[in-house]
Image (cartoon, rainbow, N blue to C red):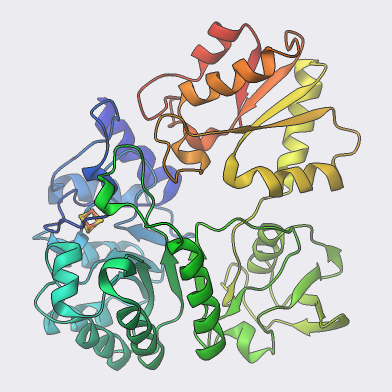
Length: 446
Ligand code: SF4
């Protein structure tokens, strides 16, 4: 099996993502694929043949939602609706998995009346609509292709056919204006969209200067989002965001969802689920999702209350919470430190995750000899602060800083697994094992 076939299978088995095409027939000015230097190894697999798709479908897991059009590996995921056999692919999935939710990410450019009927036919379905811009001409300017129907029509059809959907917006409003953003949020709200994710357009040192956010734009967008959150009832999140506290706070509740019907509200702090204490947002969210009819203890304006969430096991209750950290990370680290008989652990983390992981360690890892190292993205630089885009050379740069003041020879270094693929290679094809070879310090990825 060649490397590309391996990634195809890993993508399906590990992430429950079914790749169908790398083509998209758009040319978004913010698209990261346009900005990557040649040393970044990502794979364009073209259009997968029906034969290959049919080989992959049986490897999907019917207990998890089936995802199409999202990228979790180095495969370039394109626009699924531009695959000429996409209807047949959906029907084939449905035939093998009659009740599993299919989640499709699309820019909507290929949707037409026929497609809405198909989507209704293959429910349960969830659409992540990368809408970005409302105005047809502005959308063409930003995405290179605005499709046949304007976003307002697509949203109306989603509402008409009662299709579950979420809106996502890469905010380039210094080019498209604030009016377009608010008008778009308003249309999504009135057309029964479930949630809106707004993204700051990331840029690197390879990005052309005209596409970089102007100074002050990110603060202005934060203020605007706060304003919209007060004005509209649809949950709106802004990403990436620096989470300042571990408190398991509810950041939004989807309208008419189980959580909404049970009386949960934005701002509630979840303290316990079925009487078990939860430490982080991720713990709270995952525990609630796993359970049937959990009793959720919350703090609302300082007063403790209990709410029964009537739901099935594994069902999403409709809570919107930012992703912070899974507290079981500490148990794993403790296990590795014990088994490797290392004196101390050095946990290399992204700049984005540093504060929150630091709080977790301070509060809940008192007996653990562990120190955190914030790793800067020197390779990509710009606004990049997430662990998934760190490279081996960034970790080596951070190591030099630490090794210049202390000896780590008896210690254990823990690098974030998200920066490496299933075989341990970073985005420039360097294996994490090189880190141990070059530094002489025992190294694992977690
Ligand atoms: S639709 Fe997605 S893959 Fe295509 S150009 Fe836009 S951002 Fe890039």
